[in-house]
Structure formats: structure tokens, C-alpha cells
Amino acid sequence: MKTIKKLIPLFTAAIIAAVAVICAFFGGFGGEVYAYDPYAFEYTAFHVSYDVRADRTMDVTYDLGVHYQGDESTGLLFDIPVNAGDRVRNVTAYELTALDGAETHLDYKVKNEERNLVTVDMGDYSNKYNQTHYYRIKFEYAITKPAKNETDALFLNAIGFGHQATLNDVQVTVNLPDGFIGSQTKCFLGRSVSGEQSGDNGNYDGFTVNGNTVTLNLDYMPMNNGITFNFFFKEGVLSVKPDLTPYWIIIAACVVLALLFAVKFLAFNKDGLSPVTNVEAPDEMDPLVMGKLIDNKVDKSDVTSLIYYWANKGYIKIDMKDENDVELIRINHSLPTTAPDYQKKMYSRLFGKGDLVKIGSLANSFYTTVEAVTKQVNAENSKLYDGKSMGFSVLFALVGAMFMCVTPIILALTTISLSMFMITPLFNIIPAFIIFALTQTVRQNRLKLKKGKLALIYCGIALLAALFSLIYVWLIPSFIIEVLPKILLCAIGYAIVMLSTLIISRTPEYTEKLNHIIGFRDFILYTEKDKLETMLESNPELYYKVLPYAIVLGVSDIWENKFAALTVAPPSWAMNSYRGSAFDFLLFSSIMRRANMNMTNTFTSRPAPSSPSSGSFSGGGGSFGGFSGGGHGGGGSRGR
Image (cartoon, rainbow, N blue to C red; front, side, top):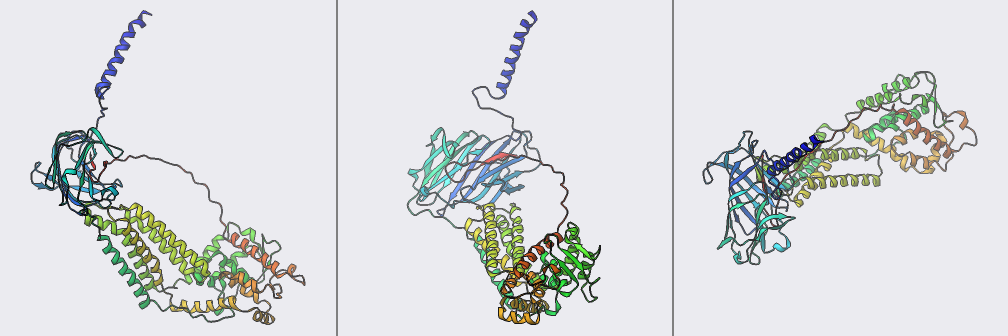
């Protein structure tokens, strides 16, 4: 017990000593909290001058003396704010031999790491601990969106509120245009809290007005303090200078769009269709090939149509007693030698285990055959479009995309700084490619789609392009390109991308085949019922022979409706359960539709993939930047 009593004073003394050390380290209970900063620095001199013009543009020059105090210091990050839609142009930076000395070379970069900041990165990999360097930063600043109460005024953050260092030897010089009313000038000095100035001094009158020049000198300013001036002018003196540079690029894009139409109508305008009426498939073309030619792709239903094609040829019979598991019965052991190889391949694999096959037994296995057949049909019918037209189409689409991708980069390099390279705009090539691919696919499908549906799809693509444009407008900073030219650039760029597909022209051979296919489709669409009734007398199975083609042409519902009021016998390939006087055509057609859908789904079904192991990761990051007070300009700086 005595030992414990002796230890209590020792513990108390230790706690008091620890608290004292902590308080001393962080500046005491009543002072500001101090934390070690490996990139700390202070300004030994902070001289800034503004040459303001009546159109609210101004030349800004900073002459800075920087003493690096952090043991990891390698340079300075100087932030110029552009959060009010203001413009920054012609940024340059130099190292000085002394504060007022000669300019020497400086490795620097201009970046846009934070959305509302243009950052001048001045530094390298060399350690600058306990060194003093002198820098000059020059740029043109333009106020493009003055507030309503700034019609005849200019609110300027002469020194921003985001400098993370103390400022010594502060000098501010502002040269203003004629019409300046010096007696109304107001100045605010201190911290910025939620955009409003406050501090020990608040309204500050320690500045000098001499004609059109305003100057202010201070020996010292704490970090994160700034200076704002409110300048007032006679009515009508101030204006806003528009940035016309992007519009020259927009005009160039319009020229490219006009050139696109010229290339289309002068070089690739010879693939128009002149349908040739046919009452049967041209050149004994099978429905699978017709399905490929009508829209340049092989659909799942195109492959299934071969089943009915073979049945009509008498090669197989079909039992749809169970529409969910149709039975196919082989009549011919093999197809004729004149049949295409892809037909022979599918036929032999379909009946690989005998003369009778239940469709359900092909689930999750027959898809490999479908893929092989599809690949072969695509290969045998691949040269459908003129190669030069495809090349010109892709070239114009690429140029349209490049107007959106490269314009911000060019403008940043030529108007802001040659050291400012942006990679973000290049990613716009992806949505441009998506729009091009979708438009090309729809154009290839246009012969199979109804006009109303086609128009709806094109509207959907246009809306998607509009959505991509909104993302573009949001991603590309407005200090590089303002909102209106960004919208115009996207509108013309995506117009070029979409309309470039007009150049794609068919080969003469493909055009000739399509003329016969469209003529055959017109027969299906427009032949009157009384004529069909006459044709049924000589060809009782007309409906069934045309049906596979109607399926791949996307008009099977119209073909079926034409026969709804006619007397149609069951097909010869159907099993006996459908024969007799009680045959119901509409019921049979309904069963066929469901059976066909089940066959198609089974032919293309795949085994369920095994679930891969999954993992996740997360990360974090931070952000930094300067601040602005109640006016334009200002910014801040940070160590690096």
C-alpha cells in the first residue's frame, strides 16, 4: 500500500510532463494547432500586378520569393481558379536570378487536376530544403460571366485565399481602364469563409489610388488570408470578350460534313434498289442465306428456318405433338450432293444418333453446330459491301470523333500552355465508336425493320448521342471550351459519325441479289388474298414453302394473316395427327410458332458457366486546391 502511494506522484508527474510536451508541440492550448508538413514553405516576397482592360481581360504577373522549409520540398504548385467560368490563357513560368532579376529556364507543367483549378507545377525531383527560389508566373485572365451586380463593377481577388504559406513583402498593383471610379473602391482583407471575407481588419483602407492605378503594400499576411478589391466604373465601360477560337474548328467540322455528302453522292451513290417481283425464292436460295443477305447477319431464327426448308423439300418430317419437345424424323439419309456444305454439316450432326431426334436432346450441345454453320455462311457471303466505301465511311467517322477528342487538347496546348496535355478528351473515341457501330447495324437492318420501328431506333441512337454529349460537356472544362461551342462541336461531330454510314455502298452483285429478295418480300407483303387463293389451287403447300423465308424476312405474321380466311391443308411433312377434316389452320400456326421458338432456343442453348471466384478491393484518395473569395481570380498555392 505504501508502495502504491509513492508511485501516485510519479504517475501524476509523468502525465503532466506528457501533456506539456504535447501542448508545446502543437502550439499550446490557446494557439493554432501545428502539424509537421514535409512540404512547408513561406513567401519571402509576393508581388502581383494586374493590367486590366475594359473587356474584362487582364494580364497578370506574379513575382514570388519562396523559401522551402520542408525537408521533402521539391517545388511549388500554384493554383489559378476558373470556377466561375473564367478563362486562363498563355500561362508561362520562369525562374528568376533574383526577385527583380533576369528570367531563366524553368521546367514546369500546367495541369487541371482539380476541376476548378489550373495548376502551374514548378519543380523537379531535386530536394530544395532550406533553399530560396524566385519565380515569375504570367498569364492572361478573362472574366466571362460577371454576376448581375457586376454590370459596371469588377470584383477581383487580387490575392487568393488558398495559399498554404505565410506571405511576406506583399505588393499588389492593379492598373485599370479609363472610366474607373477610384473613390468607390472597396478592399477586404482577411480570411474567406463560405465566400465572404472576414478577419481582424475586414474592410481595409490601407490601399492607394493614383489615377487608374491601385496599389497595396503589406509586410506580412498569415496563410489562407487574401485580398479582394471591388472596383466600380462608369456605365457602359466594361464588356465581355467572347472566345471565338473554337468556332473556327466548328466551321472546319461543317466543311467536313459537307464533304461527306459530296463523297456519298459523287462516288458511292450507285447501290439503289430496283426490286424484281418474284413469287418464289430467287435462284433456289435457302432461307438461311436469305436471312444473312437481308440484314448482313445470321439470326438464331435463320438457322431454325432450315428445318422447315428441309421438310418442304421432303427430306424430313416433323412431329409437333409436343410443341415443347418437337420430334424430327429423317426421310433422306443424306442431303443431295448439290446441297451447300453448311447444310450437309448441320443435317448430319442433327441426325448423328439415328433417324429420329427429339429437339430436347440437343440442349446445351447443338450450339457448337449452329456456330460452325453461322461462321461458314458468313464467310461465304462476306463481300457484300464495297471496300473503298467502307474505308471512306470509317475515315469520316474517325474524323468526326477526332473533332470532339482532339479539339480540347489542341486548344489547351495553343491557348493555355504548350505544357498542358489532357488525356481525358481522347476517351470520347469510345462513345463515338458505339454510335457508329449502332448506326451501321441499324442501316444494315433497315430492309427488315418497319419504318416506324426504324425511326424509333434512330431516335434512340440520337438520344444516346445526346447523352454522350452531355457527359462530354460536363467532363471538358469550360475554361478550355465554353458550353455553347462544346454543344455545337458534339452535335456536328456525332452527325458526321452517324451520317458517315451513308457512304457504305453494296457491291453490284449484292445489290442484284437484294433486288430479287426485296421483290420476293413484296410478293409476301402485297399479294392480294384472291390471287393467293388461286395460287393455292395449283400449289396447296404454298403457305408452308414460303413460311421459312417469311420468318427470316421478318414478315411471317403478315404472311399468316393473309391465309387466315383461306382454306389451307396441313403440310405434307406434318405427322398424321394433324390430318383430316378437322384441321384448324390458325391453331396449327399457333403451335408452329411456339414449336419454332422452342427449337430456336434449344439449338442455341449453352451450359450454365461455372461461377468464378470473385474479390473486391477499395482505395482512397484525397483532393487539394485553392479557394476564392467574393470575386474572380486569386487562387492559392501548395508545396510539392
